[in-house]
Image (cartoon, rainbow, N blue to C red):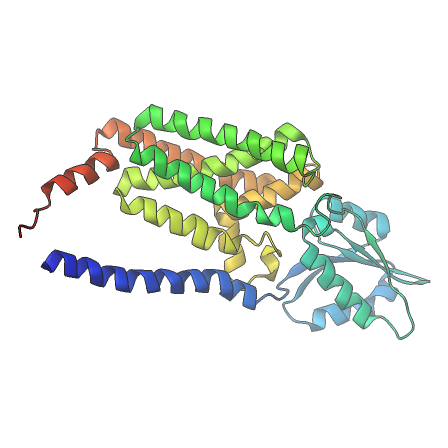
Length: 331
């Protein structure tokens, strides 16, 4: 066995376990550390009546970020604007809990457990889902599950464009065209067929397409800047980090720090947040996610175009040249 073959064998034996360890850490660590961390919630009612309840929430240090509202109408508006995940309204008949399962079923369940456990003995808490999920996705699991296919589609688009040797404006056009078609196809499946999404059809298609474009452009841009390793780096960043850190199946505020924050800086997390906003909340609180996705898409496309103008060899051609240069063992 040649020295080159031995080195490759050792590299495979070391690399695969390292990737498995990275994948387990990225997916299992956030899931194993789910807990409320500054989850924004509201409390509505007279100050004298809500003081004790507010104190109980604040005793759970770092778990909740309490917002005060004068009445139920103000609390409902805050939920619909995605300022808070839910609110407790103190009335003479007892506490009333307002939730928004569309913002995150896991948070809605968490609030239900927290409020009912603190209610006086014999008191029944009335629960109202102000912004529910769609009838086609009552548990919100289908929307959460859509983030990984979008990430895979974006990585595949960036890799295929790069490996086919497309450069400059042609590569950018291929990425944009692919993202548009993926967005339309995904909206047709999720909205028209499955009924998972309920917002404006073309807006949802645009969000899905922008998410794929941000991921694909980032992968292709990294490859244009640093070559073949850029494909691996982009794939790891978007799939192994971006997907589990997105908080799509729970909420960013339930993930261990700084996973939730990092996830919202990456396209999968920003795409999931934006999709919830347009599907259920009429686009409220969508600004940060739009900015994040737009920056990734713009910077990635700029790197792709710049790489084409620089006239560097495509990754596919470089790889072919490398194979031709390798010595062929005899005997």
